[in-house]
Image 1 (cartoon, rainbow, N blue to C red):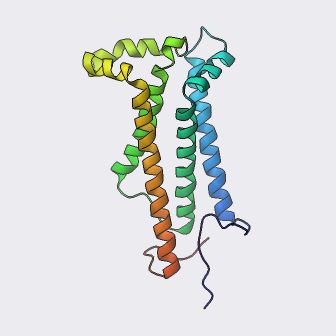
Image 2: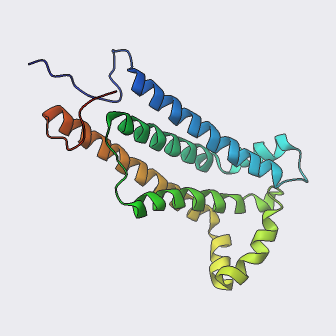
Image 3: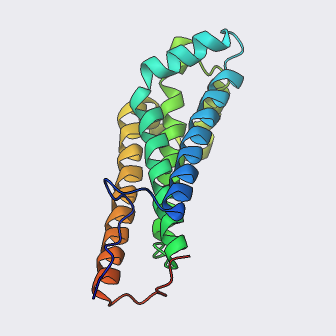
Amino acid sequence: MNQKKMSMFSLGKPLSFNTKRALLKGIAASVIVTALYITIVVVTTPNLPPATAIATAFTINPLIIGGTAAAVGAQVAMTSYSKNLGCSLRGRKALVGAGSSGTAFSSFLSFFSLVPLGCCGSWLLILSLLPSVVGTSVSAALIQYSIPLSYAGLAIVAGFTALTAAKLRKELKLRQSGISKFKEDNR
């Protein structure tokens, strides 16, 4: 019996339509995340020319910008690929929400590190309101440790992306062995 090995990426073989579609969705999500980040930097920095604000953001936060875009893009690609296979990688909604929250948290804190450089001046208003929302001690910690906390948020996003990759790999192995609990047709 000729059993077809299932993989999102098969080296040396042309990519299937579903794989191409999943990759395009992932790339589009990465571009959108990066564009949103840059847009927020430009809009909230009226005192600097857009090119300077963007260059400063990429100088200070390249790992946050690139890492978040790559992780979100990979997450979207894997989720789209799994849906095309007829299975769902989304386990509990709390876990999915935590991954999305990690992305938002990481991006939110990464803007704080740009304020002293003249970028994202509108964030000063948010910073001034922060003590009334979360308290003085918490807001001081968020500002003081904004960069390490941004990386912690990015680690959360990367962790959930790795979890999705592990779930997809497990599902593909189960399908290969014929034990999968999801439908077999690969549209």
